[in-house]
Length: 345
Image (cartoon, rainbow, N blue to C red; front, side):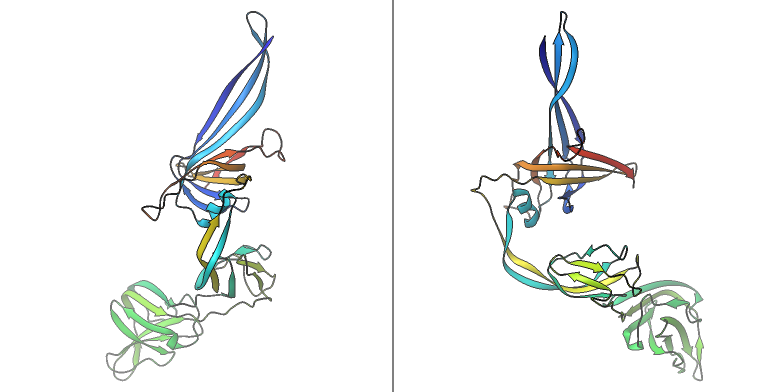
């Protein structure tokens, strides 16, 4: 009676895929085409007799690795892979205007694109200048509402210009169209955003249909939600915590203005410690040619090789990386290395 062992290898050639780090799935970038997940299982056989006969087979160990390249990674992601901390030496601030935002429901915290935020205002419309364009076939324009602004205004002065095929129309309030001979004007209803086009004949202003490209430049006047009534702010993480009120709708576009602080000079210190790089959850998302999406969730992995950070030439470059997969013993046996999901995109 004796034992015999062999290694059984599985390889998943993932290619290009979105790569995320940690349980909160911090986006790293698109992994390059050489990304692979390899699992090697050592099987031990119990053999006896002549000729030898296998009486039992058992899995004695299982090892997984992830290899590939990512784009030039951020200081924060680099530090996280190394188990280090980013130190902000100097900082500055920037203003963000009209960052798109939606409430999927009235309980779940949503996060802005930046952390360390202040002066957060959530509006029901953009607050920056907008340009809207319509193509008219010549059958519309004479009736108010044939063309309307997408966002609210409060005065005709909010509309900078209305141009039809390169010809400018004077912007006036409802009932104030220019009656001068040949004068072109457009009445704007400030309560609805409806437009109506006119041409004067010297005695009256006649409603007309227009043909060609209509280009409207204007600045909306939004209505803001109220902080601490409709939402709360987690400043350090850029979190928007909804409060269940009737003042806003879920699944509706909102626009956020805020200021955020960011480090203008950063430093990573590492080395000289016996601590290993921390284990991280790795999430890979791959869009397949057939339209399906395949996701790889590696429960625990740590950097073991690579991390050759080239700063000599171009601003962006590939960062080779190799990670060892670790068993997550909190999960059932047979499910401790990774999970693969596939669904219709």
